[in-house]
Image (cartoon, rainbow, N blue to C red; front, side, top):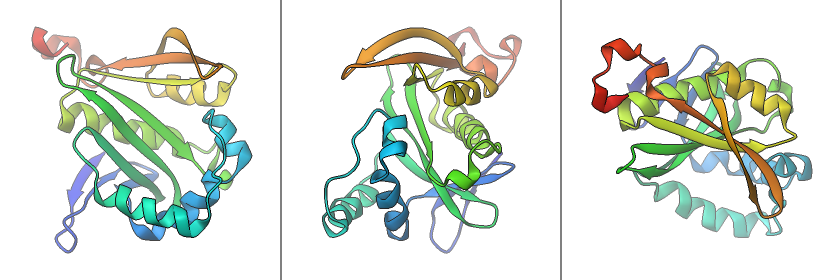
Length: 191
């Protein structure tokens, strides 16, 4: 996993073995709208499909991608051949507890079950632990979404509880910085 800063655009990109995580851009809007309008994909995120027109979506989308902040970062997931296949994010940075929440969606079904999601998660996790400085990353996934749970477990996450949100049951999962480096080389303050 490497982080690169391109001279031309000064946009940070993170390179995994199968994917590149890059800053979101306006050109991603069509895919993001299609995925956000897809009932099955939104069901996997316990959300309702978009009920706005593409033109309405585009206005808020442009504002969202230009006003990211240090506590919420969204990345497009691209194949090594530069095909946009999904998105991932970290958000809810808690500087006091050194925690962040992670989310991911592979919107292009052609790339499901082929390791792209786990590579994106692993690449993002390395970035969060090394560059953002958190000690714990957590997430929640629908209790019945076994494929997502297996992906997260493959990336080192372990179940740590259950929650109910908006009538949906979720499994909480977490990963600690010690996953990145053996505990013996981390100072006590960073474990």
